[in-house]
Image (cartoon, rainbow, N blue to C red; front, side, top):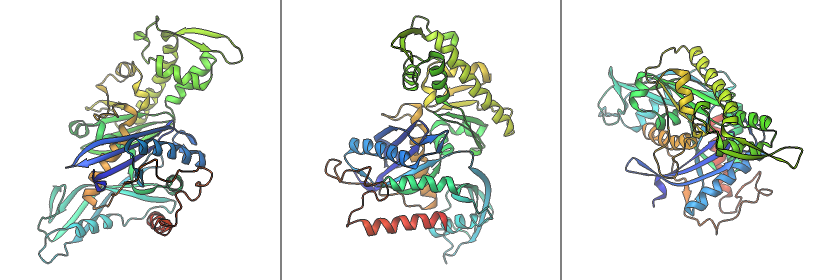
Length: 429
């Protein structure tokens, strides 16, 4: 295994932290390690407690490290939320090479030139996604390297986010003992796995229903054109069950996962289970049909808010239909309910990789795919992400000692401080 061909994604969700280790061989991706941990310190997609979030990240990272027997050093981080803005950008440069052959430096310069725009001081540019390159008026070029030309242009999408949200995310990752090799917009990442080229060309809505929020993204003409977040998700279903069944949130979550059904007409009345009642030692018996009534009502509300948000974005008809993903979409009956509400094509997207064939891993796998492709175009350096150190022999992370200076050793202290300084200088200067 060559460490220079391994990438690690970090998907910080409201209910779970997902870490996925991928090996890239001949432009194909293989998943070799996965780590998940309950997400603490997050609420409705936002960080509300840095220390708890750091501990959750550490737990997921250590689980993934144990699977591959290596130490993770760098990650590609996904970011999402209503603070994300998309705006078109355009860059123009003259080809500098005397032979007029376009090389990596010319591509880097035209992408940098596209970022020379005025943005508010509280916002930060996190990425530029090239849509096409234009060489001497010839458009539709995906990679101009090696072509002959005098004038190189790039048209793409500039992605900016709240500087505060970015700073808090980077702070959590850094305090977990990791470096950020790149930042990826989660809807773009999910779309690279969940959607086909035809769907993105025709016009499609990608609905990612997570624990704390639902992300609605519109793709048209092969590109992401709009994205928004709704503060409703699977946690709301858990809360409804907890109140309706008068049980603890933890037990309500287990009931949702094991017995939940989102479509009342297909629920099984013979599927029964017992529930501990809060405030007493008694246990009461319910069936799937009874809880399905509560689950369907909440899921219907989520889909109705989604439909309103899509109309607010200005899209009334989507020939590509609706694609559902996210952890909540693993529940039976979701696609049938969505079909009855949207009156359009509906399907659930699941990553087609061994070990991650669940909707909750769509974004994590997508981060690996999208970051790798984008890095090739922009010439970014994402490697190495791991080091050949057995998990049992490496220094253990002590939560009390490593909250401010994780993995602080004499050998790497100077190197680490330099790397962190360069990272924050890149994002905040």
